[in-house]
Image (cartoon, rainbow, N blue to C red; front, side, top):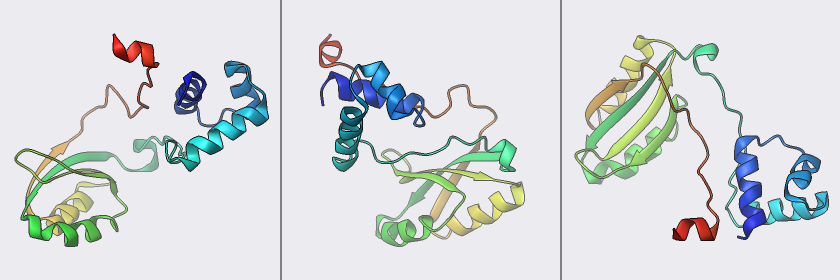
Length: 151
């Protein structure tokens, strides 16, 4: 990845709907050259997709939670199969520490949350944290230039 690839990644993280013309103006390349670079970044798996950022509250999902799940390692495969099918789950991570999994999910009501917790407690012990506010919303990673990362 060179400086221009890094600039493109930064720009696309800011706004994935930038047109090729807008991107090309910012990185000083032709639109076909920018398209080729983006295709290469996608092919190499650097860019894995594009999505809309949605206000969960405005879509009726008023409750966002983080759930820690402690489980027997032998249950991981079955749990992973199950959790991938739950549409309310926004993210699931295998973590170190006292818990095995960290799950981020959103629900329209506490009733729905309670049903979900009941389902995953079949796999182990949970600890649930309800989000009150999000001062730093999900955002892209800063892609530093090689010179910057050496400082």
